[in-house]
Length: 195
Image (tube, rainbow, N blue to C red; front, side):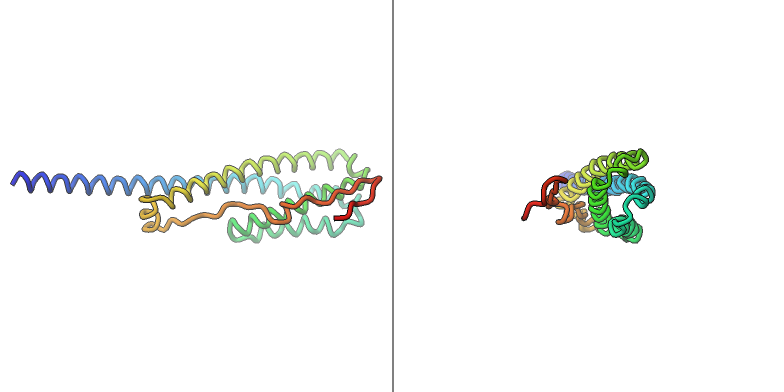
């Protein structure tokens, strides 16, 4: 009788420990998943601030850059693409377009000395540059959160809890291929170098 009681007690203790461990792993996955959502929300707040600055920037540039309509329209088009994004990947792609369009706009602005000297343009440019730095920091934090989560759901035994509860890997935010190449540089007093 004592042997059966001991085996039964050990079985119950083992079962309780296994359930407690599974609950602990599940709670960890919930926490990590919510950290990712929080990180994206923080990025989204900064992107909203940047989006609010874009119409002001285009308005200031409009009067100076009459021949650069295509550049200004690219900024607005990219901003609108963000609003129609249905998930993080689509929004991230739209953000890459905005960053590229802004980079091109600021590069083109170099050709307009009156615009470069405009105090309102300089203030908006500085504000957007500061927001870009903050967004980059937050994207890094987001990717770190995704990495920690993806590693957690890929390890044994957490993978079994993740599979049973529907937790799947999340994608990292990446940079578009066009943003990885250096733009050609042209100096005012020298012709553009051949590639």
